Length: 358
Length: 174
Image (tube, rainbow over all chains, first blue to last red; front, top):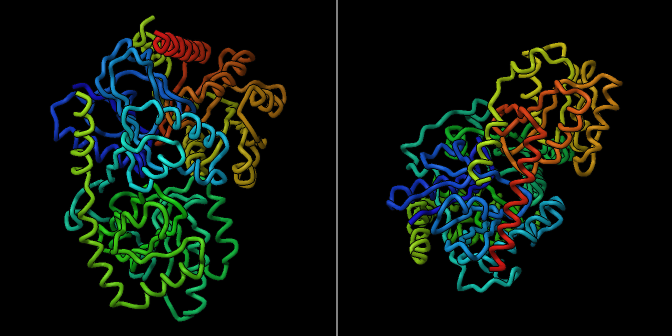
């Protein structure tokens, strides 16, 4: 069987969806002798997988007919980009949908992207033979908002990439954080991630606990820095307690997780919520939103909060930071919970879906 | 033309380049959409190879304050809102004060992306005033690519889309 993979955009700093692609495809290559080929260049993914020529377009439904005239596939699986081809090709179409953010939170997305997503992803989903969602929550969203028959939607959870045990991971210290007690937030900067809510709740906590030496650390890629500037402008008195590291290497990320007092992820909406899983893998107590997919990932190993309620976020911070016994209990549960998710499992489940089209 | 043949033409038009490609350039036009740090790294790499360059920067509204507050002297910047259409070339010519840019650089997510065809068209318009103009794409990872013939690339992208669309329609109607 020849399997074609359409990946997400080029990235050098691997985050979210590209981690899912690398994690799943590298395990797939170990599990099967089937021919796995990328559609379009992906040398930046550092996977030893061949590719067929294809010019991507990140603003439209990708029509693959021209490419299929010269290249045969039995299955084409897009990890993000909406695609289609005419019915004359005997090839299964599989589309992974990570979330329905532009449908559910249109005000949080640029208009062009919203149009692209609503029109193109919806059409691709309707035309797909199978859809993979990364959580049951996203599956429900796809059924409810795209009207897709739930029988063709398969839930395949994300895993951890790299999938090394904590003991085997190389770490690299961030000098500015050495010896500091900090609450860690790992994500890109964006309205949906609720950084202002986290800062406000942290500021409330610090106001109520003026002797606390706790700091708040934001780690992750920052594209539009004015978002961070606007947040910090309103909290100048806490400027020394809030650290923005920007994107960090895998080794530095491991270090910031390992040395964090706890991790907070108070996003309004997620299709999965990879940082929750990463934090649990490092045995950290996690404060997470009680919405969308996040309870599905965190199970009973997480302290939940309402991301729309600053008081709820602040209360969760207080419980996790001030109650050491509670924090230790969450840390213990977190390690066990993280074992549920792996790309080995994801690849096996994905392969079963491919095989159903043999 | 077969798909793989057309792709070979496209691939041959876009080749990796080093930032020393700017060492002989005097006026570099740029379109800066977002990612301040990536923009800074790119400017730094260019200036290291040609310190007397005049930059004409069309900046997205969210980048405008950052760029105009940080740079002066050899930088002219204008604020841009909306789609990056042919008006970008007019804005560059307005800033140039009659002198034609000899290089054009835009930022992209990929070294090749049909989404950028509007910027390729801007390169075509700038080339019409200066046939010696060189076009560059800064791809994620600070990699630099030189587009050797934006006119042909634009035609190839159009051919690519037209054939794909035609095959898609005829295949679905069979």
